[in-house]
Amino acid sequence: MPADVVIATRESPLALWQAYFVRDTLLETHPGISVELLGMTSRGDQILDVPLAKVGGKGLFVKELETALLDGRAHIAVHSMKDVPMEFPEGLELAVICEREEPADAFVSNSYENLDALPAGAIVGTSSLRRECQLRANRPDLEVRFLRGNVNTRLRKLDEGEYDAIILACAGLIRLEMGDRIRARIPVTESLPAGGQGAVGIEIRSDDTTTRELLAPLHHGPTAERVLAERALNRRLQGGCEVPIASYAIHEGDQLWLRGLVGRPDGSNTLRAEARGSRDNPEALGISVAESLLDAGAAEILAEVYDR
Ligand SMILES: NCc1[nH]cc(CCC(=O)O)c1CC(=O)O
Image (cartoon, rainbow, N blue to C red; front, side):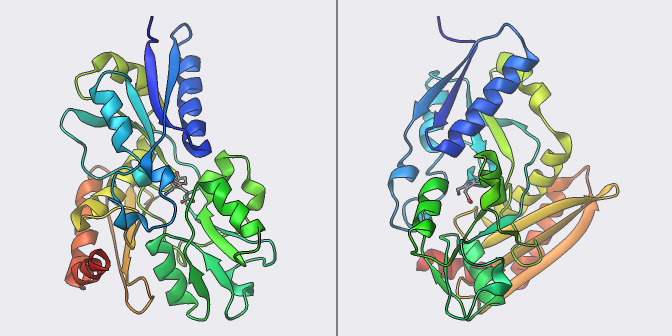
């Protein structure tokens, strides 16, 4: 007997945490149903030594999970919202967005308290072009070096002394119970987060109303408003977390305040735009901030990144 809900999941520690979180919440909300995990190894986890933008970037992590949904081997796929492509394949859609964890980037180091404490020439590990461009713009004297792999691999490389510090998402560390590795939360004014960072989303087949109803209680409206605004910005700029685009929304009274950034990875040109808008129409806000960035020259910067 297949379970009532089969969750397709990657097998990295963070992906498994997210899948178990959704399973446990479903079981609490609907006592008596059965939930199973279907693990799959994503190509994104295997290719460690080249930038994501070069290996098919968008959706690398997501594709195998989506195939399992379309084949009927699984009912849902659980994703970090910042890794989910802006468009869904025919027949699939985002059903819910769960409550956001801390969205900021984390400064992680065994020797230094925060970014300001790093001496000139210190080696900082990240493979995110978004983190790199902001880091270089703030601290052109640092040396940014490439770093990929799952959270544990990155921490190991730091501990082995390859880097003076690394930048990770606070959310991943907190979820993996390694929040004590966060030496400093980097203010969003210094490292504006990626669209969707810290939020978990659940994808289903569009025609699967049974599963959609089971999932409904997991939806967190305020998080969804923020993430929809952020993703609308990314969608208008046609790029996700593999390109140097940041997008971050918060509530301010009954409005949403969205800040966006596009930067040259070398830190030499960083464009910023922001706007406030109705929380009833997050998409319109995302598009308008994206258009301000385009007016300022974002398309040229992004084209350079894709050509590298
Ligand atoms: N691209 C990998 C990835 N996808 C989601 C997270 C962290 C957790 C989250 O944002 O929900 C991470 C690791 C990182 O950026 O440090």
